[in-house]
Amino acid sequence: MRWTDIYDIAIELEDAHPDVEIMKIRFTDLWTWVQALPGFDDDPQKSSEGILESIQMAWLDERD
Image (cartoon, rainbow, N blue to C red; front, side, top):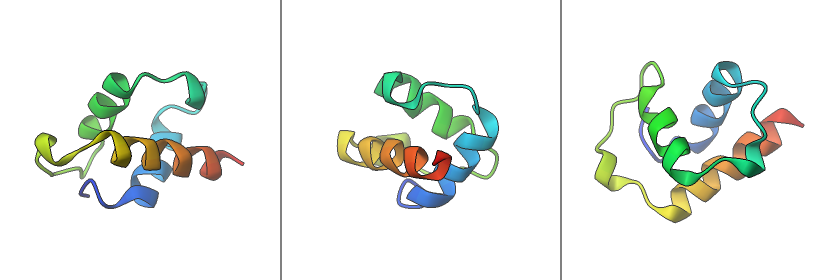
């Protein structure tokens, strides 16, 4: 997975952290969690606040 695989990341995050309050996550934690996902292999410097926000919103949609 890469930073641009927003929906795949959201699905994996929901599986890994099902009890987290998504809207209360700090982007620094989200950044770390994404990189720890199995199959994630992208440059950490390619992330941005916009990408992290998109992941957060996709994760919220995944939960609903």
